[in-house]
Image 1 (cartoon, rainbow, N blue to C red):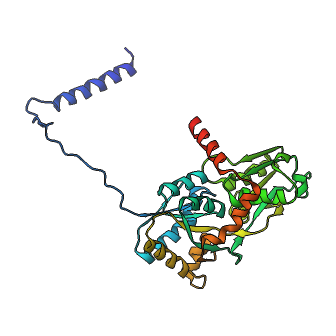
Image 2 (image 1 turned 90 degrees about the horizontal axis):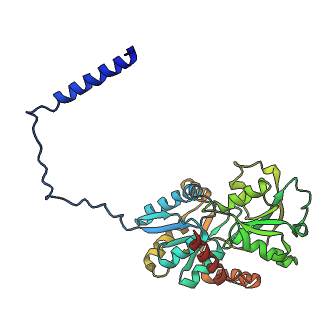
Image 3 (image 1 turned 60 degrees about the horizontal axis):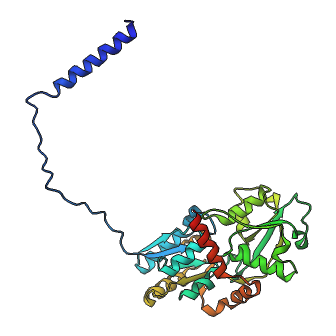
Length: 323
C-alpha cells in the first residue's frame, strides 16, 4: 500500500471512530409525534392598486422610469400601489380587460382598444418638448446609401415595434399610406420579438444590419443612446403628431380612487425640484386631464390603416397555443 492510500484509510478510520462516539447508548432519543401538525400559511399580498406601464421598453427601464412616480402617488393619496409588468402589449391589453391592471399607462392605440372593454381615459401627459402630442419616426443606418428618403423604403425590410404600438407601427403605417406606400410594397414587415424592450430591439435590429428600416416612437433614440453610436443611425422620416400617452382606469374601479390618483398626478409641477425629478425620470413635463374624445384621431387612423384587431387576436391565440 503506498503512502497516499494509507493516509486516506487512516483519515477514514478516524472519522468513523468519532462518528461512533457521537452515537452512544446514553444519547437521548427525541420522539416526534407526527399526529400533531400545524399548517403554515403563506401570507397573502395586501390589496393594492395595480399600475402598469405598457412594455415599450424593458421591465428594468419601466421600473426605473415609473417607480418614483408610483411612490409619489402612494404618499400623496395614502393608497397602496403595486407596479405590474406585462410582457407584451397584448398581455397588457388583456390584463386590463380581466381587471388585473387597475391603472394603465399606455400609448393611444392601446387605449382605444382597452376603451372597448370599458376602460376610460382620465389623464394624459405633456411631452418634455411641451407638446401634448407625440410622433413616430422611421430610421435607417447612416451608411445605408440605398435609403435616402421615404420612397426609398419600398422593397426594403421593415421592423416595427409591435402591431399594437402607436409610434412604433401604426403612425408609420399611416405615414407610408399617405405617401402611396402600402404594406405589400415592402420585402418584409417584422415585429420586435420577445417580451418587453421592443423599442430597443427595433433600433438594435437596424443598427446590427438585420433590417433596413425601423419604426419607433420619437424619443426612443435618446433612451437607447448608451447602447449605440447615435451617429450610425439617422431619421428618414417623422410622422404627423397624435394625442399623447394616456392614463386610463379599468372598468369598475371606484371613482373616488380614480379621482385621488388623478388629483395627485395633476399636482406634479416642474417648478418643484422633487416633482421635476419624478416627471423627468418618467419622460414627462406635466400631466393634464383627458377624456375619451381626445382619442378620436387614433380611431380615424385605425380606420384608415384598416387594422383588423380580431384577426390580430386570432394570430396571438394561435401563437400562444403553439408555445
